[in-house]
Length: 230
Ligand SMILES: Nc1ncnc2c(CN3C[C@H](CCSCCOCCO)[C@@H](O)C3)c[nH]c12
Image (cartoon, protein in one colour):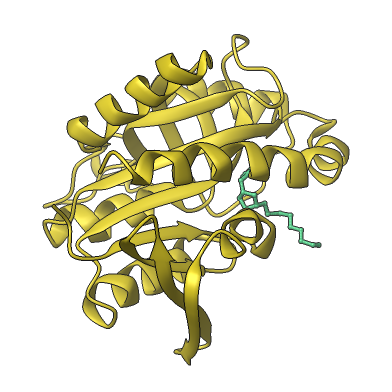
């Protein structure tokens, strides 16, 4: 039974659907982030958005654990689809995460690898199974696959396909692998859920703007419904 559950996003839109579900909310600002502490169905929750990209996500995930004492982390947000099976609004959970822009291949290493690191970091299987239970109960389709993270908004089919082939990834975003490194290094179970907002192609910018809010809500509504089972 976790002491305190962190629910993290990268953008304000990704956590907005969560905030009005919390009771007894107090807010605090720490290291240029706002943290919302409250309860949901009797469980202690801390919600925050990191701001965009791997560095900000690393900072916030670390603070949620070290400063706010969270011992389990759920990420909710949107992603670009790589797999043709993923349409806008579809849900994907990560079984592993990699960094598609981490590159010391000049030294013979594979893309996404640095010494003492691992290309693909696995997520917590118990939390993935809870997600599958919730999806079954709600009659929702849920894809499971590798999610690739990098410090770029991908709006180019060639780049998206390279990422898909190189990492066998089904979706891409800009924060998940940072959360994976922090949580796996600190022994904190973690879970990454994303709802598709675009297809990381030439239309990505328009689709992202059009579907950010609705896809962020789809993901957030699913993640909060997992809390009761944790
Ligand atoms: N195709 C894509 N490539 C990479 N990541 C994603 C994601 C996932 N999130 C959304 C957000 C995009 C930040 S750029 C838009 C910011 O606008 C801010 C207002 O100008 C960042 O936090 C990563 C959805 N589609 C993606």
